[in-house]
Length: 448
Image (cartoon, rainbow, N blue to C red; front, side, top):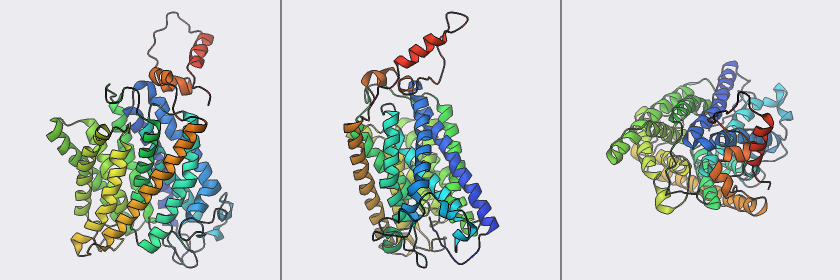
């Protein structure tokens, strides 16, 4: 994300675009809930959706209280973290005079950035589907927002301007990450891998089929994600500009070629072309173009998306080879796709694109590839280590994994006293409220 605060007053057109883009990013949350909800078994769909909703609630509250300050406050730690008190509560951004040199209201920018955190945190939940305590998940995602996402966002997204000092990867290393290949995709994928290892595999993983229960949800969720991704990427231009138009087009094309890349591999490997594969390929292409959308040409976007679709299709099978249960392929799609897009800038970037950097294939040598590798590796290691420590701390204190019986019976009943589908025939004309309540209560999640 390129934040360039040049002397200007808040521009009505740019503000209108960022308002719209923020709403599009918010739409990605229900899109992700449907996408993930369709991928799990019917006994887990409500819990999967609630993990996204719960993450949104917790992250937005903490982002308002301290997260935005940690990410975008004046640096107080050698490029590692912003001043946690500078914008605490966001009350300092209420007046128009608080915008300073920004062409958009800073309070709107704070909300836009907070929605990025929502999607990043919610993505992690897919790796631990079917087996995590909901209350423990909320504790984890809150701590993760403060300790992992906000500092990484400072490193990657907070550019120095005037007297403001930003993060080290963006300003010292020269990492190019237009909309979050490192801060969103690699960060969520590495965190997901850590949690999957901490919680261990689902009961029956590798032995029993765990097929998506509703592919219609998956396709609908993928479509909403594609729609919302225009706000995610083009919104990061922070204005209704030519830059936003270029990013809009590269995002569109990478999503399309991601579908094709995944289906080509699927066809050669499995002799089939599935809706699940098309939806997954779409997301893989969008993941890869997230960091590179402002750096590549339309042809570069097609290549980036196709490569990501193919590589991620192969990568999702690694969990069976290495024995980690990444339930909904967060590692295979978001971590691997984020690496493809981030490192791909060092190869496919053209100085004619908005970020004006050249990759190896456009005469830029290997220097930018090196910068991209430093950023990707740093975020991957930091997110993995801190997420693993958080997961272990929660597991050994309040417990992170649900009881075996609840996992077998269905986490929806155990955690939420609800089921997504009423498939039980009534034996009488009127149900007994006391009987239903007793049945649901018996299946509630065990207290921590």
